[in-house]
Length: 512
Image (cartoon, rainbow, N blue to C red; front, side, top):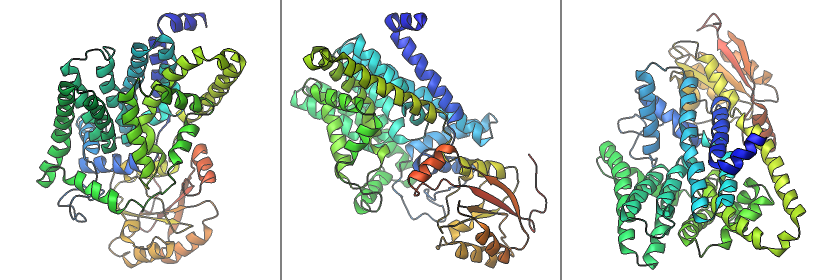
């Protein structure tokens, strides 16, 4: 404890980065799987299939199901395509090993968020605020787990923080025009990953426009536009023959299908922030962020624009708000620590302050340990990993007790078989089994996976009417957190998977 105290007093950044490394390393090793649909099926499944010479999502021209740009950003999946290609060249073929390296890379990248957050707070205020801001970025309960996920909302953050640091590092006095140019390049990278991050360079641009800093505005604009055009426009031009084809389609989809997803009230993100950052500290940070809005308008205005847009837009998912959270933490910490030091209320009530932070750190520690070791979507990943030992799986079928089968991650199967679920317009068990039976002569299912918790016996009896030589293989259990999340909200279908083998096609069970 004396050694920790000494480092906390003399080398706090070293201690903070060490903690950040430790928990991100643990998350990379133990927090397997994926968090939300997009960070696997929109990124990993797409890139993995491209390396195999296929196109899982039918995004590319020439794919049988493709009719033009689909509105998906190809930059971030393209980066993973390059990484998976390198893995293939050097002989890394196991999907779990590939994903371990992917998580390690993302975890290492997220250390930049911690470093720049600390340096920004130290430069603009003092070491006290920097220590707290850096510590929060390092060990806030969701940060290590989210940092190793393939979420564009998290992957863009290090570039936003690095861009801000280039502007701030000289205390806003006289950043060189080259600083603004490189900051623009970094903001452009962030926008390439997450298009909605455009509100940050736009917001900063508006502030320096009002300040009539024409050179800075020109440098920032050139950097952002060059980077964005080079990657976003260039990739689309190579693939589609015209720049920004995917971006234009993305905007069109966002406008025409804005009510087709999760529509929540305008105040939803207030609730998300206050819950995510753990009250009462979440209120402290939010208050601190608002306290110095004039002083740090170049942070406040972009964040406000980003927040207003997502609050107004009908489609609301919790992860959408993540890009602004590190800035809220850093500048909220700065504002709160300065306010608390000069507040007579808090000076007279040190026990209340200690209790508030004590409660926060207790809850945070529990959640941090829990999520750092959480294997998310375990049943689906392990089911595919289990089946990967069988070669030449040409087609599978998944049936569900509620008639809405879970999508299986073929990336972990390490082969890309067809699926009767993808061929059937009706997701019910009857429809999928009947379709498989009609095609049994030339395309019989190698395996049928049953998902559910209430009892699969009726589904198995029905399946054996079509495939009498169906035999039980194994059961894959979901993780504890998956079960808890499913219990909280059944829309998260994290349930048992019962694997049955069609012994007419594969007579013998293979052992590991």
